[in-house]
Image 1 (cartoon, rainbow, N blue to C red):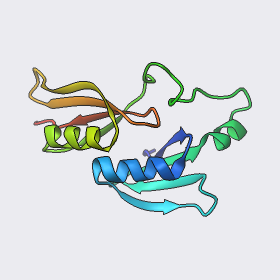
Image 2: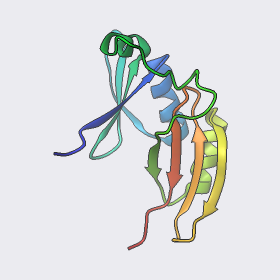
Image 3: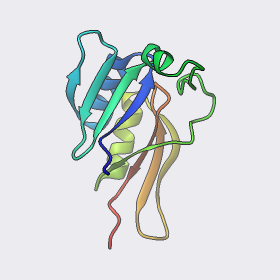
Length: 130
C-alpha cells in the first residue's frame, strides 16, 4: 500500500490551485474542464482539490467545509522547504493567515503554520535531519 494522493474539498478548485501556485510555487498538473477537480504536482504523491458539491455527492450526510470552520481542521498538509521563513512570508503575501510564525523546534526542525483562504491548514517545515 502507498499513498496515491490527498483530496481536499474546497469551494473553488481553480482558486485553490492558483493560491497554492502563488503561495508555495507548486505547479498545476491538471484541472478538469468542469472545474470541479484539479491536481498539483508535489512529487511522489499528488495534492488534489475537489469541489464541495463532489464531496456532497460522495458523502450523503455532508462533510465539514474547512473554509466555513472557525478553527482549522485536525488535518494538515506539510510542505518541506529549506527556506521556511521565506515560504511563510510568501504564503502570507498570497493571502494565507498566520497561525504560527516560523520557530526552531527542539529537534532542530524549523516549522510554521498558515491557513489558506480555502481553510486548508499548511505546515511549512524544514527537512528533518537524521
